[in-house]
Image (cartoon, rainbow, N blue to C red):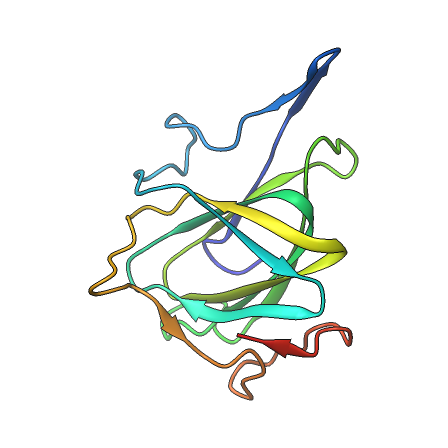
Length: 159
């Protein structure tokens, strides 16, 4: 696992009305602060990649479809520098496999694609609100040779 990347298994509580699933709590051991909540979607065959943040920590939870989240540790001082990793995030109400919250620390480059269904939808709970005038977002092309990760063959474009 890339240093400081964490996963939290999420408990789905089904009943005769549907289900409930908590995602992030202020009493989670890794909770830092709340910035905002937003949802993002990515169609199958497209990589929404690559980017990183200098200050912000992301917390991803898939709420529709299945997402393949790819990570690259380019941090100079990290014990896992140069490592790539991917994590599959399943959406509720699935309990097998269990949905996960994926914590992505600052400076870890990341992106995602849908691997089941037409689209994957991720809720992100970052530690800072988005600043439109000065965003904490730095990008690489989805197929950058600087990142030693290869998307599944069905991914034919990105951004």
